[in-house]
Amino acid sequence: MIDFNSYRNLLISDRTVRRFRQDKTVDTDTLLSLVELVRYCASGRNAQPLKYAVADTEDLCAKIFPHLKWAGYYKDWDGPEPGERPAAYLIQCLDTHYGPNCLCDDGLQLQAITLGAATLGLGCCIIKAFNAPALAEALGIPERYQPRYVLAIGHPAEQVKLEEMDGTDDADFKYFRTPDGTHHVPKRPLPQLIIPK
Amino acid sequence: MIDFNSYRNLLISDRTVRRFRQDKTVDTDTLLSLVELVRYCASGRNAQPLKYAVADTEDLCAKIFPHLKWAGYYKDWDGPEPGERPAAYLIQCLDTHYGPNCLCDDGLQLQAITLGAATLGLGCCIIKAFNAPALAEALGIPERYQPRYVLAIGHPAEQVKLEEMDGTDDADFKYFRTPDGTHHVPKRPLPQLIIPK
Image (cartoon, rainbow over the protein chains, first blue to last red):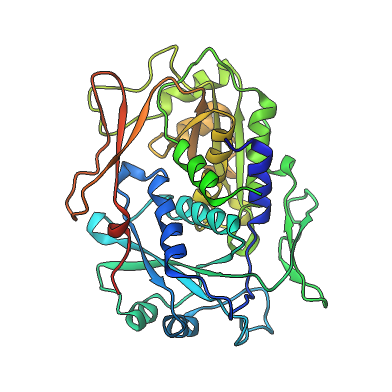
């Protein structure tokens, strides 16, 4: 069995990455094994309404990229350059056959997948800012499925460093990049996450 | 480092539990170490707007229980009896100081916590069906914080078994309990989670 500290270290290693080794592919079996993990997530009403479109080829990835927006705080950066783009994507879609929402299944499943990817040395970026109708059309996703999140996946090509935030309400939570290319992510200290009794 | 299969087994061991060993408490430090895990989750805009009220005493747990609904499919079961109720709760709240929503942070964080709990032999139940205003009032949670999910936590006192679902659109996804008290959870097969190209 995995102990708490090993698990915590895995979580710490599971960092959002926006620049990848595009030359290092992620094979279809690996992507399917990542999707398989979501079978073991809790699900509201146990309905399990989320389905995945798997983009495992250069051609499919090229169809997806133009519809994504990257790193809202980086006004002078339009996203990863050719050569550092994701080698694969999973498009998380709501199967509307099972109803109009998925409660928090979306996040439960994305966390399960990114942790699995981290065990394989892969990095992910959960993307909410994208043109869903255009993406669905580009990939030929039937209308029954609504794209909700895009998960970019690949071998990391950037350093990410966690930073301590000060614990005040108006502390700056924006991530930032230093001249050496490192992406820094401030995180709230534990006491600020607890509502006092 | 944790390998993929060990991680997958952890995920499989992390089952929703609705009956607990109420006599086995979960101490405050353990609950805080579970909340600490969410610092390492991805967060939309990195805003980290979710905060937690920690219920770590019999008295607090007794204030929470009446506001919860359990297992919607079990029409003849109102939830765990005295003696098998959760020994602790985390109330996940949106801190509205940071905006009106949290994207999928809720699920990301709940998955991170329940996996951490599983490494400690604890079981959880993610509860969405509860009276949020009444709960906030009972616990004296300030208006700034909106309760979004209740996470019940304790030492499991029931068996949970995963079951294979057939892969048809209208397969029955409802969980069920057998006379021996085991809770069975049908899960969709992998092929049904993949949107065909």
